[in-house]
Length: 359
Image 1 (cartoon, rainbow, N blue to C red):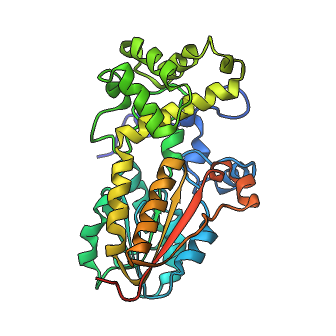
Image 2: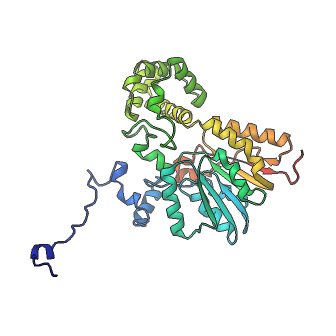
Image 3: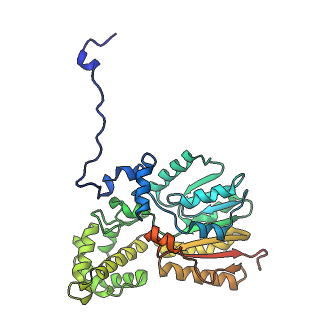
C-alpha cells in the first residue's frame, strides 16, 4: 500500500557532516578524518607523508629495503612476521614469496590486528598465503608445527606502531589528553595508572633506571609517588614529571624535560607489557624456529632491547646455532630518516642459522 503522507514520501536521509575543527588543519587525532580514511583520500594522505609526518591511524614500515636484503625472501618460502602491526613489512614479504609461499603473522594488539587483517584481505592476500594469529611473539614456537620444519625467515619489529602512539585513547602519548594506559593488549593486565598506585618510590626509581636509563629517576620517582593518587591521565603524569624537575637546572631546557617525560612513559610501557621478558623468550626460541640456513631480522628502538638481541645472538653463535650474526646494526639511510623522523632510533640486527646444528 502506498504511503499517503507526502512528508514521509519526500523524507531523505541527511548526509553526515564531516568533523568540524578550528583553523585550516585538524589538530586532534579524532578530527583527522581524511588520514583515518587513507584509502578514500590517498592524495591528502600523500601530502602528509611528503611533509615528513605519519598519517593518523597508519604506520610507515622502517628499513624495508634493509630487511628484504637481510631476509632474502624467495618464491615458495615460509616466513613469519612476528609483529604484524600495520602490515607494511608483511606486504613486501608476501610479494616476494609468491607464488606458493606462506607468511604467518602475529600481533598481540586485538584492536589493530582486526583492522590490519581486513585491509590485507582487501588487497588480495588469501588465508592460504597469509595466516594471521593473535598472540604474543614469545609464543611463536607453537606455529612451527604448522610448517614442515620451521621458518625460512622471521622478522620482528619491536617498535610501537604509530596507530598506537598517536591515538590518545590508547594512552601512549603524553602530547594529548588520554587515559594513562600503555597496554599493547588492552584486554589483559593493568594500565599504567594502576601500576603507579602500587609501587613505592624505590621501586619506581628502579623501574625508571632499568627500563629507560632515566638520569633524574630518583627525583621523578619521588614526585610520582607523592602524587600517585592524582595520576590517572597522560597529562597528569607529564605534569608531575615536569613539576618534579622544576627546581633542577634541566628545567631550563624544555627539550630535556620532554626527554625525561618520554623516557618515563617508555619505562612504564615496558613494565606494563613485560616487554623485556617477552623479548628474551622470543630470542631463546628463535634459533629453534628457523630452518637450517634460515634468516632472522630484528628491529629495535632503544638500548635495553638492542643489548638483549646482541647478547642472545652472540651466545647462539658461540653455541653453534648461528653461522653468521650482524657485527654492527644496520641503520635507516639519511633519506629515510629525513622522510620519517620516527625511524632515527631504529637498529636492525640479523642472524643466520647453521646448515647443520651442532648438538
